[in-house]
Image (cartoon, rainbow, N blue to C red; front, side, top):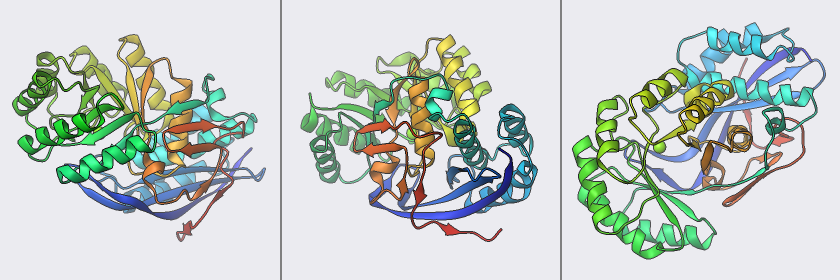
Length: 365
Ligand code: MG
């Protein structure tokens, strides 16, 4: 199976409700889709969103890196030479993790197709069914409580509450949601860097003292503030998870050595794809630190890859935050991973099993 062509497209899907965090508001998925074609007729698919405030990647940078740097070098390569291809992808440019992730996902899709197996089996196997939480966007308290109750009605047993705007309102938000869903759903808070270390300790201790039990608090402080993250982790009982603070394996090693967080959030768009996500999971397992698998505002192309990884690494990836497809107004992908609200399952189709992507707008080569 030889690579013959790399194509790019734009996929737009409206969200059911606007996605609001301390960093940004998004109401439509607008992701770059890469399709890698081969001489056997097999096609592999990958996807990347623009997340300038997190990874620095924009549509323009993703397109440029794939079109000019990675794509041309892949032509003629054998999909079976997976490691050589991965080296090439990561050697072509510093950072640009989203572009690399999109290409890696398509390559892994083809690699598993080559051997006729679903990707998770090629990554070591596992039970092909997982359960995800749902994100509750930051908003007026009443709206957040209503959204949380409707998520519980839809069967979600874990809710990820976005906070980090204004600390005392955040505390009221969380208490109100906790009172409304207590006993029916676990709460995860994501502050998206919205607090200082001292504010975070104050907020989390206040909630602990009020009897609000949280499963975890994610990224309370600025991404670069590892000392602040450690400060918080040391001073509260609630587990603290690092998200924007850690991208790839070397940052994870550093963070774990410093014991600056209790949990690591792995996202393919931060690691630059599957190969480094596997490394991060394995490093965390060495330290006996559990991981969550998350996603950006992505559809069921790149999220499918994250599902396959989560299944294969379920020994250490024990928390799942792959609600991208559930946030979309419809699923544009006819594929091997079924997203049914909180329940996600994988079919026996080879690779990612993607048969069709509806509404994909081709980008000029
Ligand atoms: Mg996060």
